[in-house]
Structure formats: C-alpha cells, structure tokens
Image (cartoon, rainbow, N blue to C red):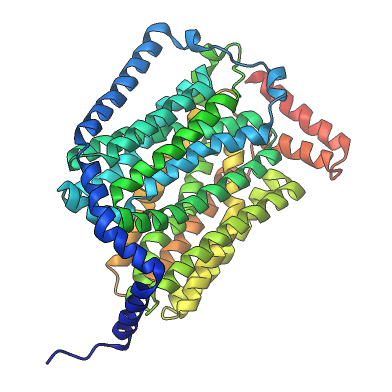
Length: 517
C-alpha cells in the first residue's frame, strides 16, 4: 500500500485546492491553460526575427568600431560641456536618469534565472548551454566594459550610454525570440556587450560629485537601488514566466527600456569635461593606477569582503533548507531581511561619512568588519547546529559591510582625473573574476564537500573578512596616500574639527609631491 501523505504534503494539497478556488488562482489557471501556449507558440515563430536582430546588433558594433578607428576619438568629441556648463546641471536628476541603465541591466541579468529549466526544454538546450548563458554574459560584460570605459572617457558619457542601451533593446528581443539554444547564446553574448556599458554610470557619478563625502551619499543611493532590483526581478520574472511563458518576460521589458532610452535622449546632459591634454596623459594615468599598490589593495580587499555575500546566495539555502529544517518561506524571509539590513547599513554609512569623512569612515569600517568574524567563529566552532547563530552572523555581516564597501569604492576613485569609467571597468572585471571565481567558488566547493557545512561556511566567511581587513590595513590604512590625507584634512577643517594651521601644513606637504608627479 502507498504510504500515507505527510502533514506537509496534506498542507500543500489544501493550499493548492484553496488557491485554485480563489479568483486569482482561477485566472492563473486560465492563463496557463489558454493564453500561455498561444503566446509561447506565437513568439517562438519569430525565430527569423531573432537571427536578424543578432546580426544587426553585431553589425552596429562593427560599424561603430570602424568609425572610431577611422575618424579617431577626437572627431567624436562633439557637444562636450565646459566646467561652467556642468555647474548648471541638476546633479541628482541626471544621476537618477543614468541609473536606469543599471536597473535594466540588473533586470535583464536576473529575471530569467527561475525559468532556466523551461527554457532548456523549449530551446532544446543542454545543461552546459544554459549554464554557459550565465557565465558567458558575466565574462563578456567584464571585458567589454574595459573598451567601453576608454571610449566613454574620451568621447563622452551621453552618446555612449545611448548606444549601448539601444543595443540592449536589440539583444533582449533577440533572446526572447531565439529559435534554439545556440541563437540564445548569441543573444546573451550581445547582451553582455550592451551590459558592459553600465561602467559609465560610475563615471557620471564621479563627474557630478567630485567631493568624496557627496559622492558617498550618491553611492549609498545607487547601491541601495541596485540591491533591491536583483532581489525583486527573479521573483517577478519567475511568476510571469510561469503564467505567460519566459519569452513574454523578455519581450515585456522592451517598452520600459524604450521609455528609459527616450528619457535619456531628451533630458540626459553630457557630464564629461575632458582634460585638454587627455590624449597624452590618459594612458600614463592608467599605468600609475595599475602600478600603484594602494588602489589595487582596495580592489583586492573589496573582492574578499564581498565573498561572504556572494556565498550566501549559493550556500545558505542549501545549508538551511537541506540540513537544518528551514522552510522555503523562511529562507525567502531571511534573504529579504539580509537585503534590507544591507541597504540600512549603507544609509547609516552615509550619515557616518558626513560626520567623520571618507577616510575616517574607512578606518571605522575596517575595524567594525571584525565584529561578524567573532560571530562566525562562534557559529562554526561552538554552535555549528544553531540556525539562529548562523543567521545572526550573516545578518551582522550584511549590516556591517556597508562602511567598508562604500569607503573603499570612493577612495579608489578619488585621486583619478581622466579615467573614471575605465577605472570602474577595471574594478568590475577584477571583482567579477576574483570574488566569484577565485574566492566564492572554492568556498562553495569546500562547503558542498564538507561533512560539517555550517562549520566550513562560517570559518571560510570569517577567513575572507580577516584577509580583507589585513589587505586594507597593510596596503592602505597603515600609510594612507597624500590625496586621502589632504581630503580628510579639508573635510575636518570645513567641519571645524581641525585648525586652519594644521590644514595648511597638510596642504604644503602634499603640493610639492603633486608638482613632482
């Protein structure tokens, strides 16, 4: 005889029955039974359109590259403002408009993940092809950002953003109408090139907010938004994909993206004020950035401090749901609270930055980062069976990481003059390579192959934070660069925390070194 259904199975059956009797549940069933097959069949018949769009997208890239190569970047420097013109720009309005690019990039990257299994069936793809669609996009975006960053630093932000956001329209439609897995991979490659243009957003923020403490506020708003969007887009994308089909979700993005493109075309001002001698000084500044261990130590420490957050999404659900009895709803609540704490941490970091300056915030963030280390050690060594200890450790990390991440990012960009977008692209490439592949991937392998996954997860997370703190202290805070000291002195003098004589002494110590450079 068949075993009697468990309490959980009986509860699930009652929930399904109640849902099917609810008006919304009945509507969902009707959509799935009648409209979804029609939509998927209709959209799937547009395979030729997908091929044409892919070819068109690559043709646009080739033509634009040929134009830059033949005419040179100097011929494309049209309508660039002066410093006086940029003073009249509504900074926050311009920043919110350009942030739409990052919002659409996040949605395009995350919305289809819950529907991968159904996409594999519809496209006739393999597990390797569907996994490659995610990895391929990350790799292409990282390397494309380097070229796009150089271009935006020379010819301007506005025209570069408009081109690559337009390319995102084409690639998204090509993915939604892809006839098979191979053409879907081509569309995802093209989408990765378009998403590489998001490095320009950091350049715009650096253009508009040259003062470190002001940029910290802009960075807090920006980071809060890009944390909320990835949290919501997989859930909404999965729900719509279940109701209407995954193809419809891709096509549904197009009207919103087009509206954003029109808004930028009409109202987004150019923010780049190029240096008069940028052609001769640009690559020299690139060499100084790469050859200077202090900004590089900031990037490496960012990769390590971000690793526990990256590992959380891939390991925490497996550990808590698979081995510690946490339900799916409880896991969703834990992930939601983690995101909220991360956003609150950035808001608190902004307030602290306005009180103690960006260098003071970094010192505070490095010291505070050791607090979750203590909880991780207790969780891994003393209480490996406690759900609450592990969850509280992760919650504290999510809240405490804000000052470290914000201050390191702002200090990394602060001394730059002409290479804002390229520097952001370089940091993004290292973060995409070092944090997920060189740090989080070995950690995931360690946790999945361990007999005590909670202990392995907690100790590995603690080790990543300790390494990040050591690199930040040894490479930067033990002897901060002169530009950081000068900026901190100016901030303290402005706040009345430092006598004018001390500020003058600091400036006099910095000016000879600047002249020498």
